[in-house]
Length: 58
Image 1: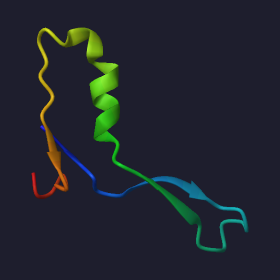
Image 2 (image 1 turned 90 degrees about the vertical axis):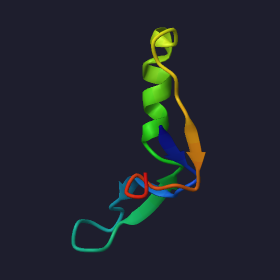
Image 3 (image 1 turned 120 degrees about the vertical axis):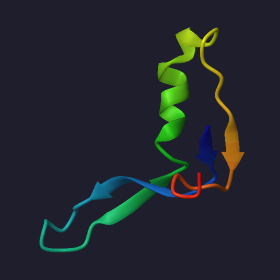
């Protein structure tokens, strides 16, 4: 089971150097990568996507 629809920090851009706060680029979450990486195991793996649910809530 994975949560979807929750903004997750994916990239930190330090354009002004490490003394300044980075720009944060968000994505839907890193757990979706698991589904594509394990797609060859679909006969053994069932992915259940739960909308708007964080990993802590899961």
